[in-house]
Image (cartoon, helix red, strand yellow):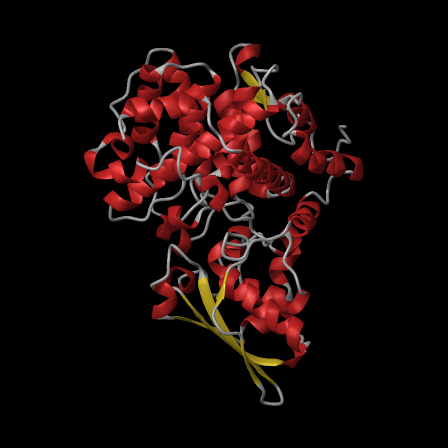
Length: 448
C-alpha cells in the first residue's frame, strides 16, 4: 500500500464502520476504568508527580489534564503519566497478533490531544481512536515480522499515538510522514522478555510510547523532520498494511477480566472453571500442574515482593484465584503480597511449557491444568483459551462488572455516569468533552 493511501486513511476520517465505532466505545470506557483502578498504585503516583514537576506546559493551550488527577501537565506529559499508570495495572485491552497493547497508549493520547478541541464530537473522537488502533496494530505486525527481538508495545503504539495527534491537529501527509518517522526512530525498542525476567514499573513500555508519539506529532507540526518509518514504508512490510481500511483489527481486541498479564489468563480460566464445576476450595487441593506456552511459563515463579512481579506471575495469580475466587487490584498490591494463605497454595503449583500451546502463540493464548484433591481425585481442565477476545468474548454484563471493580474507589454517581458514556459517545450530538470532564477530577472527587 502506498503512503498516500495510508495518509488518506489516517487523515481523512471516512468509512469507519459502525461495528468498529461500537467496539472503540467499549474499549475506551474499559480503559478509563483501568485508569481509575490504577490511580492509587505507586507507579502511577510517581509518573503523575514526575509529569507535573518536569513536564509542565509553557502556555495554557499546551496543557492537558492528567486523567483522574486534577492537575495539568504538557500534552505529552499528561499522556505519558496516564499511559504509565494504566500500563502498570495489567487489566487493559490487547490484540493477540501484536503480542501487546494499544489502548493503554492511544486512549491517554486522545484525552491529551482533545484538550485543545472542545468542539470535537464524540463520534469523530471514536473514529480517530479506531484509526490509531489500526495504525498501531500494523506497526506491530511489521516490527515483529522484521526484527528478531520481541519488543514492548511502546515500540510500535507510539506510531498510533503520532497518527492520532496528526489527525486531531489537522496535519497534512508530509507532517504525518515525518511524525511517523520520528515516532518510530525514537520509540522505545525495549525487549519484552527482559521485563518478564525482572518485572518492574517499566512494564510494557507504553508510557514512553505515548510520550514519544505525542512529541513526534507536535514536533512534526513545528516542521521537525524524520526519516520515513520503515515499519510503514519498507517494501518487506507492505503485506502488513495491505488490508488497512478493509480488516478492522480493533474489533479483534480482547478485554481482560483480570488485572494480570494475559499470558496467565488461560490457566486462570481453566482453574476457575474447575472450581465452579466441582466446588473445591484451597483447603481441598494438594497440587496444581499447569501446561502452558513458553512465554507464560517464563513468568515470575515465586511469591512476589512488588505489584510488578505480582502482575507478571502465573503461579501467584492461580494461588490468588484459588484462595479468593477472584482477582482485583487489591489482590496484587500492599499487604496482599504477604498473604500467608496465598503463599501456602503457591507452593503447590508446578508450571511447565507445553509445545502444542507454544505453537499457538501469539495467535492464541492456550493452557491446561490438572488439580489433585486431597482424597486423590484428579481434575483435568482440558485445553482452555483465555477469555475476552473473539475466541471467547466477555458479554456486556461481564465488562460492566469488571468496570465496577476497577472503579470501586469512585463515588457511585460518577461510576454510573462514566459507564453510561459508553452509549452516549455513539450519539450524533455528543461531544467528547462530556467524557473528558468526568475523567479530569481526582478519584476521590464526585465530579458529575
